[in-house]
Image 1 (cartoon, one colour):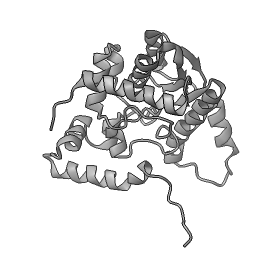
Image 2 (cartoon, one colour; image 1 turned 45 degrees about the vertical axis):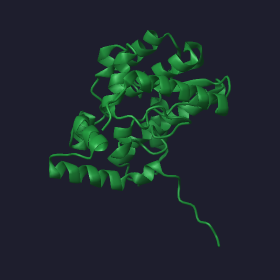
Image 3 (cartoon, one colour; image 1 turned 120 degrees about the vertical axis):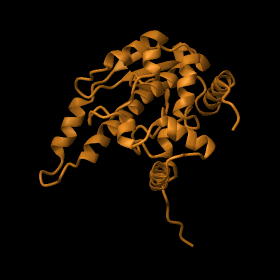
Image 4 (cartoon, rainbow, N blue to C red; image 1 turned 90 degrees about the vertical axis):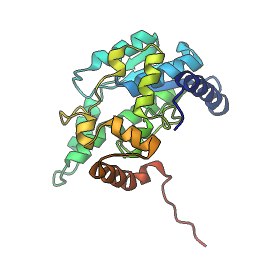
Length: 244
């Protein structure tokens, strides 16, 4: 496995972002949902480096009270980008309240609804601000399906889709982002558990397996393989019937 060249990767990622906008929205703005974690922070920082801060818009989207909203605000202040805060609580409560009363609102539905509302918000702002919406998912999360289809898994362009968590962190540090944002422990904000607790393995173990094919623990390897196979559909186009 070749060594990860963080500076070269940053240069190539910025060139790729510039090229995307030249071909798919010359002069448009990058719209980035800001959670205050490493992925949205690094995505926004790469867009600023590639396009300039005047063409990057950050959107903070708490669902009611968000305990770590200060992290998201710290990121947009650090980058000096235009930013908007849209609280999705009324939309969330309104949609939940409009569901049929005899329909069970499952835990999984409750977890996935906010990301889908946030993506709708990003596209609404994008269409108001001549924008293209950034997808902030990384390779590690995508590999095991740790994303919401048509929620955070959506977007117009994806700078981090082929970079592991370990590599994203290295980029964040190289770009000089606040270390507490780069190393912030990711969680779904609902279960009280970290992403790694929910997954059943660490990103360090997952990243090593993705890049080298090596996973010392057979049970963990089997778990990763099972999650990967079950969630491949999230990375593929919707199947469509073709009449003969």
